[in-house]
Image (cartoon, rainbow, N blue to C red):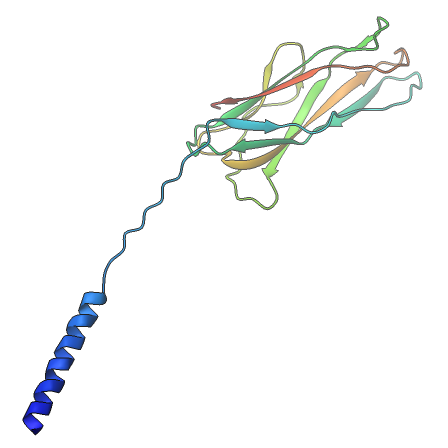
Length: 176
């Protein structure tokens, strides 16, 4: 009887060991990550400047926080261009478009990104022709990036008082 009990316990132990081995396995998870089709550029509300004439030449500045999203996942880089028309008050009085003095950039708060490496030099005199004003070198600028250009507008001492408007055209394109 005792031999039979030991045989049953031995058989149960072998079966348990076999079951334990059978439960072990290796998983090989995979992830498929698809990139977006292009780069997006989100614009803020229209910037404005305000100054009071005093007979001297003045400089007024405006800045705009631009939201760039590079979710392509390619690391191909990107660039931003800008053009600006002459300011006009609609009565024949004008001001020169302005000079882009510099650009700051940072990862959008609350998001991971690869900071953009920019090689554009400043200042850039704005005209009606598109000019590259910021770029993200290859393998940089991935994710959500906030880009803030600062533009100085010259107000001559002999300017006419009035409300002047201009059109700024911005674009984002693939490649540094």
